[in-house]
Figure (cartoon, one colour):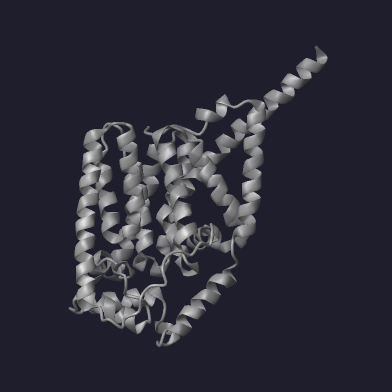
Length: 368
């Protein structure tokens, strides 16, 4: 097992007062998060605004319709960059700076595999996650819970449009990369990480965090491989920028920028809309995310620290940079984030046990 279980680690070293403080903080964070989750009406209103800004009929507007059209044109023989920029332009979407245009990887693969093939690959990826994540994080009954939570966090793959959402692919690949990492056999984890970078540049924080962990641990060969991967990615991104520049016109729309400063509400909304939580009241997503982060935090070891910091980093990224319509960035943490839900009960049990120790100590002191 690469990580550990939630029953060990720093929780057992807490004093009774420390256990009470952590429990209090958890409750307050859960309440605050529950009050932060936006309603579905907010997302729908923003989607309607974006459709109205497009010159296209409602049925042909929106991100998914855009990606479908690009894939159809590439499958018909059009060059990707010409198709992507022209369709962005038709949807009144920005094409400047170059990162406003998606990398060509997913559209090129989709044009070859077709809808059925893409859907099959997504389902296989989720199955691989449900197999690999428990092996990396837990043992026994807890592993079964981790597998179930992983599936629950990745069931968006069953939605018809999921195959066109770059972040869903990236999230599945990054979770698989995380699960494949072993201290003595880390290189297989490079493959899904590299694929995720090829699909979506927002996968870069995962690789950079991995490199930071390797540097701190003085794992130089691992660090060298990650630096090489980032260098290859930078080269590919430069080629992408050049290709976009070749077809962009001076009067094309530029992005509004990515400094939404909306706080965690957008991330929580994304988790609510991308998981089984979509059938429950919106506010539940807040406490669920808090519990999932807690579960990862109490896991311990390299894997627990990595998963917690990665998910927290993506939450920070979304909180600072995302706009209302970027709620799908939350998929970058899924299904990894949900694995923490299966680890949280053991952590809560440790905290409650710590409080009982204090009560028992008080009774013994009183009778003495």
